[in-house]
Amino acid sequence: GEDVEQSLFLSVREGDSSVINCTYTDSSSTYLYWYKQEPGAGLQLLTYIFSNMDMKQDQRLTVLLNKKDKHLSLRIADTQTGDSAIYFCAESTLGGGADGLTFGKGTHLIIQP
Amino acid sequence: GAVVSQHPSWVICKSGTSVKIECRSLDFQATTMFWYRQFPKQSLMLMATSNEGSKATYEQGVEKDKFLINHASLTLSTLTVTSAHPEDSSFYICSASSASGKHEQFFGPGTRLTVL
Image 1 (cartoon, rainbow over the protein chains, first blue to last red):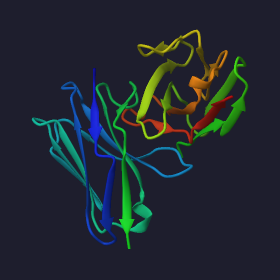
Image 2 (spheres, helix red, strand yellow):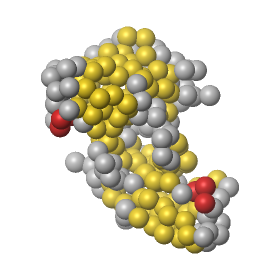
Image 3 (tube, rainbow over the protein chains, first blue to last red):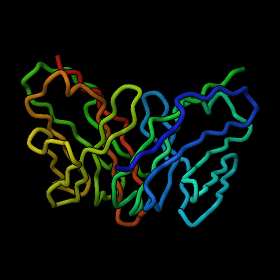
Image 4 (cartoon, chains in turn red, green):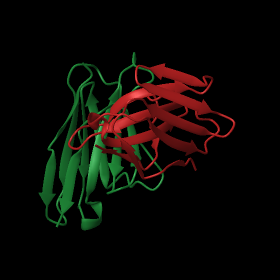
């Protein structure tokens, strides 16, 4: 079955860039997502990328997709304390509105002062 | 916009009882709703997909007679955990999408179920 893998923890200094990596196995993945989960809140969609794209940038966020290696990364520039959260990578074949998402276990981003 | 609520936020029940969790889309019509389950330090696992007015489609390994899903209106879906047991204790999260929002699911804040 489909599998999405992420490292569980990432620690960075405030002001540095954070890079969260994700790998997936389903070759039919068409849409790839990054969600943010803060304590007590629902998952918040940060950004998504279509499988025919290599890169997408949105303000401090840059998503890179290597479809050949099935590798997705999220770069957060100038990391702030408010970025501390769990970041989930997810994939979908039909598009997140039509079918359920397959999630990784989440990467807990820890910000050091 | 695109707010999804869940009720209750947390519930504690005795083993053998049934618990109903509500998921509401507050400001849009949710043609499709999804139910996920999240164990501590684990990923969200899709349990079922429901389209308004249709029977839910359950993922492999999810007992449809145990986890009853109703999506009777475009703004409300319910998940009923029947004859709950301690192993059903988990964090249940719903999400919703609209016909116009093809790429995005909007997630509720989740419901923590503890079965004693």
